Structures are given as C-alpha cells and as structure tokens.
Image (cartoon, rainbow, N blue to C red; front, side, top):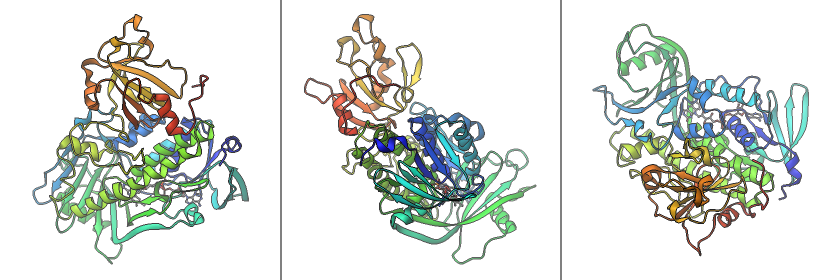
Length: 535
Ligand SMILES: Cc1cc2nc3c(=O)[nH]c(=O)nc-3n(C[C@H](O)[C@H](O)[C@H](O)COP(=O)(O)OP(=O)(O)OC[C@H]3O[C@@H](n4cnc5c(N)ncnc54)[C@H](O)[C@@H]3O)c2cc1C
C-alpha cells in the first residue's frame, strides 16, 4: 500500500457520533484533512451515555476541546457504592487521590446529546474538517490506493473518493457489513431502562449520594447519575416485561431513594445490552472504530470511553502513514492494541460489574488493592497497551503507583520547563514522539539536539541545568525527583513516549543501548527525517 497518492485525498469518516467526531478532531490535530458523513440531519439528540472518564478528558485536551466540555459538565470526585438497605456509601472510590497523576482527578457527567454539539462546534471552527449531514453511506469500493464511497444525499446518489474509510457508524455499521466482518459475542436477554428525573435532592429532599452511585442489591439494582440538569436512574428490566411507563419508572426510582416531593419525569428510554466485538477491525483501507468495532455492556461508562481510546490511537498512526513518515506497518498496532482491550478489558470488566451489582463483595470490589489503584482503574488512567505485540496489556491496576513500562500511559506529572514555567508533562509530549532522559544533568548525559518536531528530547533531573551544560534548552526540572520516583525506573533511563502519551519503550542509557532515533524507526518503520520538520 502506497501513501503518496492518497495523501491528496481526505480521510472519510462515516458517522458523526461521539467517536466519529472525536476522530475527526484527532486527525485535524495531526494535520490530516477529513470529511465526516452523517446520515441524520442534526446530531443525535438520543439519550445514551452520560459519564466521561479521566483518560477520555485527557484525549479531549489533546484535541483541544476539554475546556469547552468541562464548562458544560458536572465534575465528580467520588464514585459510590450505596447499600440499598442502609442507604450508606460502602465502597467509595475517591478520585482526588489522583491529583498528582492527572489534571483531571475526577470523571464528568454530561449527557451524550450535550457532548455531541460541543464536538460539532469545534469541528465547524476547524478548517481541516468538513461535516456533511444527510449523507448516508450506501456502499464503498476499496481500490487499493484509495476508497470510493457511494452516498445517498438530498440531491441524489453521489460518489466521493477518500484516502481511508473509518467506520464510526455505530452498532449496525454499514461499513462493517460491507467488509463482511462478523461480530463475536452475545446480546443479552436483559434490557435496561433509563429515566431522567428533575427532583431537588439537595435542599427540598436532602440526600448525600455521590454524583455517580451504584446501588447494589441481590434482588434489584440501580445506577444513579447526577447530570447538570437532572438525576438519571438506570435499572435492568426483568426478561419479557412490557415497556415500563413513566409513572412506573418514577415509582421504581423512589423505591430506591425514598419518598420525595416535586418529582418530574423528563425523559425515558429502554435498550438492549450487548457484549460483542468485531472479528477484525481493519481490511485494506477500511477501519472500524467505536461501537462499529465493539458493543460493550453499558456499565462503568466503558462503552463510549472505550471508543475514545480508539480515537486516541488511530489518528496519529494514520497521520504518520499519510504524511509519508511511517510505513504501512504503523497501522497494524491499532487493532493489535485496541481489540484485546475491548474484548477482555472493557467488555469483561463491564460484564463483571453487571454481575457484581446483584451480589456484592465479589471480584469487582476486589479488582484493585486500595483506593488509589481502584481510582486509577475506574478512570481508565491505568490502561496499558500491547505496544510490543507480546500480549502485555491491562485495564486493571493493582498496586499503588506501580513502576511504569512499555504500553503504560505516561503519568501526567508536573515539571518545570526551560522557559521557567511549570507544565504538565503531557503538554510537552502530546502529538509527537518524546525522549525523556532521566539522568543527572550535571554529568552531561548525551541528549541530542531538538532538530525535528517529530522527536523531541529532554533530560529530566532534580538539578537545574547550568548554562555551561549545553542542555539548558532541553532540560526539565523535577524538584525532589517526584516524577522520576513515580515512574519507578532506575537512574540513567530513557523513556520514549508516543504521540498518544503512551510509553513506547523504557531502556537503560549507555554506549551500546538503542538510541531514541533507532527506537523511533522501529515503531514508525521509517527513519527519522534528517532535515527539521515543520511543527
Ligand atoms: C440507550 C443507550 C444508553 C447508553 N448508555 C451508555 C452509558 O451509560 N455509558 C457508556 O459508556 N455507553 C453507553 N451507551 C453506549 C454509547 O452511547 C456508545 O458507545 C456511543 O454512542 C458510541 O459512539 P459511536 O460514535 O461509536 O456510535 P454512535 O453513537 O452509534 O454513532 C454512529 C453514527 O453513525 C451514523 N450512521 C450510521 N450508519 C450510517 C451510514 N450508513 N451513513 C452515515 N452515517 C451513519 C448514525 O446516524 C450515528 O450518528 C449507551 C447506548 C445507548 C443506545
């Protein structure tokens, strides 16, 4: 597969759901033009997901929309488990413990129908993205060097060419069907009901529930989510029961929280529960993402947030390939890293959470050893990718501050920059490769000059770089070695970070060790260009 021909063409994204929109912002962030084709006229106003996890917020920050999203959302620093009988919080997961690790030591509640317009507005303002509503993909032809899409539009059937086709078209994906790819897994006989109530649980009927609370119970359970404008209640429905009325759902909600005054139902929806993943995610120039690739039991907010991990992983790979900076092999890591996370990570975790709701104190409460590791897992900050293809990945963190290795997300610690300001490390690493040399700057470690914006080098030391070290322009101050100690690595270690803030390699520095440029070449399949690259 050649890149140069297709470099002229945009990438086609089918589906303007949250994953299509986020992927478009990701491609534009990496300098790749794209067109998003959406069947519907407006963005979806359907009631769907409601909680975004910390790792997803970090991805939105990278793509430039986190602040807009946060300004509309409710921040939640505690995920609670409530004993229905006593109404007491039993296993609160306190997210404030993550304040060193991330600038988002909280999750947020925001209805999906409020998230999508924020992403849509960011897209409208972005010159590299073209959003075309009322364009339904009918079929496509993969021609090897490009893809031709056939689309139904208000003006009739049209054909358009694209460099790649990204199927972000949801659970009933046309792209997946055209690829002839099966989904593996099951659709459960159970249905879930969701009801949004306007009720004052602060003053008029005071309750002290966390903004995100799981009411576990052997007979029937419920998830409570406080949204910016209402309280959302979610339950399983018994098999074969009729569609519940608004009054029935309201009464069931009150059976969990007790009698309250002035309750108004503003919305309700029932939906099927699936646990299914596509057998393959890429075929030539067509690639599956989000719900088109995986339908995950909607527990612990692992549906949309797992799709956000797809939208974090693929755009930088496509950008490197389409800009002629990476070989085709750079695309392979997408499915290798994301698919096991969806099947055995999010998928199985969500299923375990579903089971544990009806029989408390089992495996899910014991997922991690303490609050910190529980919080790290539940916010998805602990996600580890199989970067080396050795089946070494994880969604669960068991220890407090475990030593990092290849595949881990780089903890977003504070450092002090050559310019004198304080910065989170992701601000210096996102969007390009970064080599961090953990060493004693006074001993003048060999740190290459920053000649390419594709790979940047920094020495990280608790000593400030003297002027005569020649390293002052590429040194980061780490007071008290807090960042170094958090990583749990030895001194004189090179940590290579990918554009998506995941660690690509952790290696000792030394005369015979691989250099950052050699590691870069192994990952991208092409040498680092010699001439400086434009930023
Ligand atoms: C009722 C409900 C409740 C949910 N609750 C939760 C929850 O609490 N937590 C959680 O994490 N997840 C939840 N989910 C799942 C979450 O909403 C999805 O994971 C998320 O919407 C996936 O986003 P997506 O962009 O991949 O797909 P979608 O949101 O399905 O978007 C796909 C888009 O593609 C468009 N499209 C489809 N076919 C074509 C075509 N041929 N041409 C052009 N456009 C096309 C569709 O119109 C749609 O806009 C819930 C889902 C539902 C349905």
